Image 1: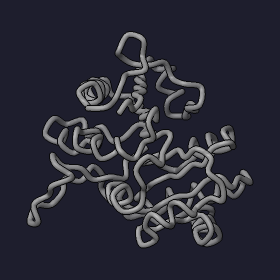
Image 2: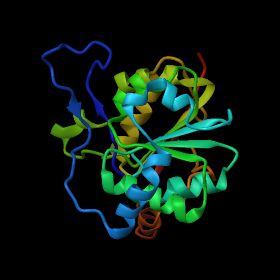
Image 3: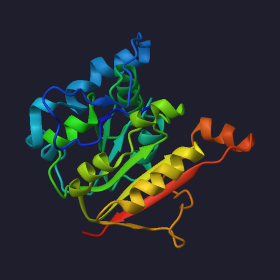
Length: 240
């Protein structure tokens, strides 16, 4: 999955002339028939925009079930599976690539679920402009772009400033769940989260956690397991 966000060393105090370092690259691409159908038929009912602000976020669902946000859901298959399996929760996805959003909407429509909404925008701006403090029970970021070349590591999404932006959006006891199949990135994630204020590692040994049952195995991940590739999950709970 690709992340849908931008980050720099200080998201809170950007210099007016300084461009944020993007952790994603917008890819031009045509939608498939199914993706276009999902966009055309479902965006009006299930799509959320920056212009709607916090009011749109708060009124997206009719009841006050726990809200789970996924940043960078790719084609959305696992997010639809989670929304289907955990129908006592509301799921809100953020993805910057329109084909992925179209895919999610089409799959959600075919699955017949109603507890799912999505943004097609930059997650940093969604968090700043739309998500009220204390409104999320879980934030999940699965397999963000590892930017594996050392000179590109600064583009990685999981950085101290981004985690500090996320923290107040979680309710007390809310969880950040990260997953990656790049060991070097897993080590960076663990370092960033361990140093972050207001979080506690949920792993008994203060390291990585077993994959929780609610995170589905993707086809890519299953193939990786067959080839002996590792996957690292991190779960951190907000404490203050």
